[in-house]
Length: 407
Image 1 (tube, rainbow, N blue to C red):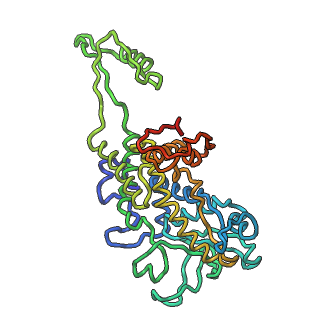
Image 2 (spheres, one colour):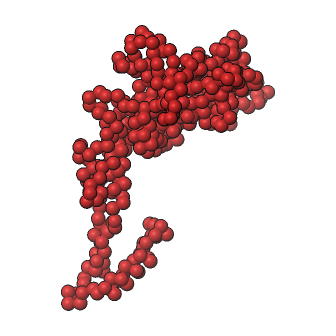
């Protein structure tokens, strides 16, 4: 945050380029560190926090299950079930995955460490490691080199970690350095300047609302110059106005005055209004960087159909692909030790991906009206009992204008 010795900066001054809060030199291609992605992104930006939190909670709340890939049978108990759904003594399955996805979304990589060297693999506890504290040790400084170990630095001790007990999942990092180090690439790498601007807009808006002051000036419009308003008159008028028109209780109410008054509105400047508009656009830009539907954050054009489409997009384009990417690493590193198991999603249980009862009924009616199914088949598709009437088992002529009562 930028300050002057003389006091706080105005919203206009905050937009001078040399006063931006920098998280990296985005123009010269330097890499944003995991630490900065967390501090200046998640902890320093309400927009990034909101986006990442929604993604992490969206993924962790998916209806996940374990199944045997050999026969497709769902596993509901046993050793592998406990391993997945009881990761450690301090976190639930949802809390564990929310933390895992938070790091992955922010930094472009996540680590799951199985603390099992002393008690055995199948009874070990899983711990999410902060990426900023993990160093990948490779055999040589080459893109062809293999990972030989990991080192975890908690600020006091540096501990080597066996690769057999570490799951590392990373977003694609096409830079030569990334290919050598095997580290992922944070989405904020390409959004450093957007994040800088968004953070400064938040500061500017805070400054604006803190110092906005009154929105109108009220003066007598027919004041006699020979008899100016004294201090007592001003206090009386102010007290009366505050009592009659102040507070939420007076919202949209009307009041009359026996004395002619002149009201001068103090509107926000065009610069201030542009700052507010910039905030909305930068929020959309950051949502695009993370592949998250901006409507779910901004609430713009929030009709029922638009929101449902946005929620479905969040599942199909973000929550589910993110889970599948991490789950593939989870299966490769840990589940394979138990057998031929995998993690799946009960998509039929996700409300946003499935039509509502009314939508299902309307779809069934359209199929009946098109002469594609019988009314009884339509009733079965929406969970109703079939009727014994013969007509209900006959396909109706196309364009019969079927209604819910007919089905």
